[in-house]
Length: 97
Image (cartoon, rainbow, N blue to C red; front, side, top):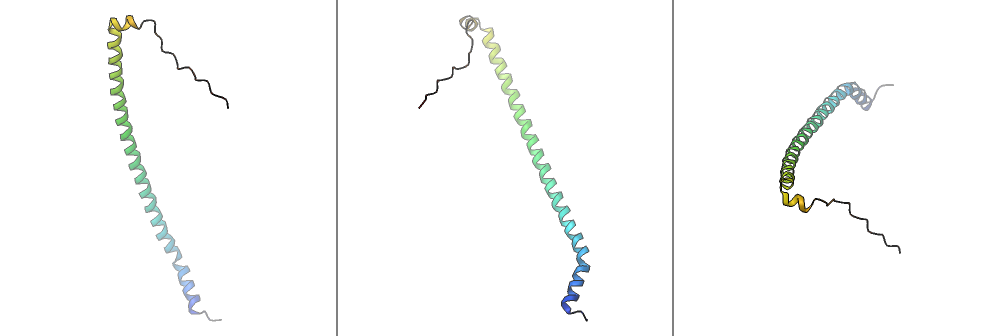
């Protein structure tokens, strides 16, 4: 039985399929590379933010240390607060309904 024109088109497209798959693989690889580049950029941005936060926390820690040292060096403060201890806040009783 002779092949119809649609059968020939199918066989032609099937023959071209490997090339189409190759093109799809190239697009997929490019897409993967773009996703990896974006992930790397996001990671780098996160690292920079973490570094900035760390510097800010280090600065805050230095200020707190200086404040604590000045309080400990002040004899009026240490004498007035010598017996005080900071205790956790007592839990409030829960009401029953």
